[in-house]
Length: 291
Length: 220
Image 1 (tube, rainbow over the protein chains, first blue to last red):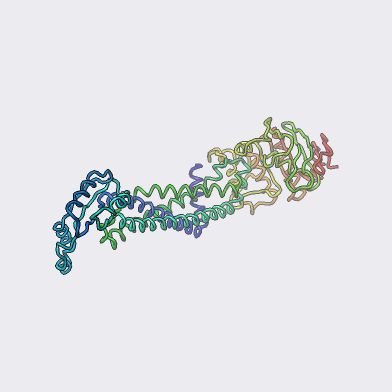
Image 2: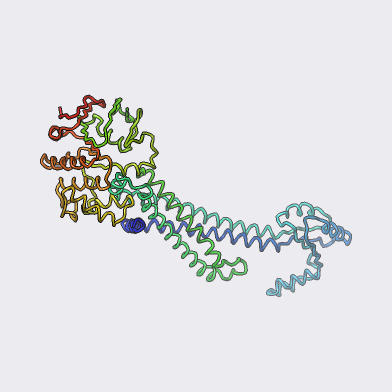
């Protein structure tokens, strides 16, 4: 009977102030969607880093007038370098072959370049791609080295962009969360005010504190959970429309977001939504009802 | 005990000591601001004294933790000048509410509430809303609500303050009947008529001090 009473109070409470409840749920939903999106991107960026950095290469291009001696010296040095995992020597012919492959859509460019013009190179795989700088410092002044190019610097730029998008989403989530929090506090105050007579009687006859607080706290929690469900719907829609829709061209570039990822992030959203609402409601009540 | 409210120039209760036996009927009288209501608030554990102790039902509640207050209050019934009924509930529902929010089942309420409404003389008016009842009847509902859980103590803060003399007498008869069941009744009032008619113990307070404590007193 008490559970039934509390639940019916929750529904009555949400309905009594329905515009406020809707505002509360919408802000909560937007905030939790942002949170979920930034959580998904976090995983996404991690996955992509793994994928890309594993295959990353540092290329040491040699000068046109490099001597046989310089080349073998460099090769021995690289072979014994603990930072370097793999060394692959690419001579002019191989470089040209790669070049042809890479630009097969632009035959004019391929025709304009002779195998002779392409530099020989060492392609290195590093044990730890982040130690590129050390490799660079070590070999940049070696005789016969023209230029050292690190793919990870390019990737870093891409990941910087992704990380800042992720941070923006997180910041938006926090700002919206503050708005949601204030709305929860306000809703609870209004609810407590409209039930002040009941609350006064309950306190007088000795109803336990949890029994007085539960309907209000649960009202906020229900709003939070509905908000997180809407957030889930928004994420599913985003995957469906954006990733599988207009952004599908980038599929090869971005690691895919699976339904599993979204389902994995949902408990986080629901948990944050529920707990933040409950905490806010409870603290508001402590000030407002002094129970 | 002594109670000084913050910002007050003098203590609301100044070194007051009073002991009330189980089953007694006591009037606290005195002019407004004399500190009568503070005594009720202390008995309800709403305020704590700055000095001294409050002992209720043999338990020292002076430093009782606030989370224990709800359970403590179940042994005390309370009636006020302004009735404090829920306007959107019938007489029956108002009384049942007090039972249900402390965890009693609907079945218990169905058994006990009609009984207590009968006791206060509201038989047949269970399903009226407060606005359909007279002031005296509303106060009867409030008394029924205070008494339905069979408290050891009934506190009444000017229960006749809003009622005409005849109705007041009826409410007093009701409180007297409740007192005869063994319930201690503590009543704050400045209704001299009633005090003079009842001839019960009278404790007079003035400016926070007890100036008189008389066994079968009159209003003075």
